[in-house]
Amino acid sequence: MKSTLAIIALVLTGCATPPAWLADHYDRNDPCQARAELGRPEGYTRPDWCGSASGRRYIYNTQNQRVGYIK
Image (tube, one colour):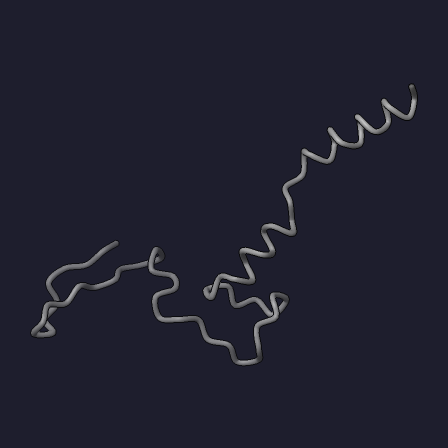
């Protein structure tokens, strides 16, 4: 009986923490994550489209004139 309660308590408390392995998997596959602990090589640069939510991205027409922006 005690071992059954211990197993149930162990299983229930284990669900309260987020799965770190899943978060690490998504971070490693995200090219915008440039942290060294994710296995990025020395001098890694993120793609140009990373961080688009932090500021404005300008929209240009076919004549290379700015016609608007996305914030």
